[in-house]
Image 1 (cartoon, helix red, strand yellow):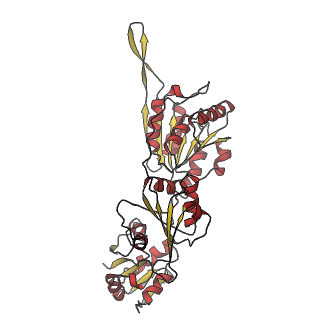
Image 2 (cartoon, one colour):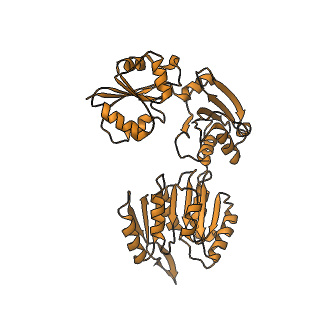
Image 3 (cartoon, one colour):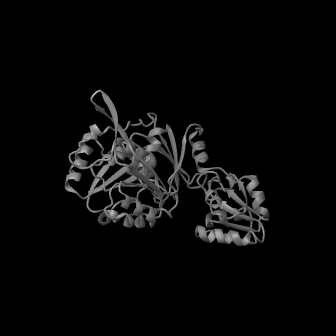
Length: 403
């Protein structure tokens, strides 16, 4: 079986290409990579019998599959193969090739070298080709003394600066490295506030320094008695805790709470994702009033309350990472179909308290990836004269699935 070599080409200058990479390239009959990286290989007078310009992933994988039957193939990737590179994508592609990795100098290393710092105890992150949010960037910067980011044209350094300002981190220092180890190299250090007002090359690497970095305070769960309740039914606190466990929210997630009722789940989510956003959807006036009151009571600035039927507002909401459905009123299938068509996977959790809702949910969700459910029934103590009995609440089913 032929080899598929994945070669880290470093920052983009021949001085950074390793001798092992050169040796493999010189002997390889088939090479695929971007036009820039193929040009770099050509600067070594390495001219494989067949070179293929990388256009899109599927085209690349098909080309590799065809050529590896005939001989060794080299796949050229920028930077190092071990950090957010095509190597991981190829490993997850399902092809069973004999793959060998040839490491290179990463963009992180290149910028750290220019800064004269080491990479111990830093966060190595990427917003290049990934669906990351401003909250994700700010969380990494908030919790790490140094956080390095690979940027892109859609998430350039100035957007990182704006994200930090959005979350009160405008005094963080950004060192921005562009075209490292190339003729047009630029390395500048500015505050987040100044970076937000400038423009930089998209394909840069940024180091955010925060001398006041600290961990996120873990929030306790709220008791029922802490909420303003009115006459709107509310999910009991023990069930809320289980729902939060099933949602597995990250501090920077975008989360929807559909059919939010009093907003008790929305409030819990907002308190646990300080760098994320919660969208609470409800149409009943009494419930909307309670959500607004509870939002104010708990100071949840990252909670947006949306008035309307679920199917009327879906397309107006930003794509979520997690979705909780508390009350669908016949709109479950509409929600599931919509979420399943989104480009990124969504973790979906819902509750059912009637057999009819459970039956419908199992029918719609059971063939989806990761489907499972639990049934819980909470009993509470009740004093009866000199004795204590247990008063049982209605059973609740909690269902989850990946869409």
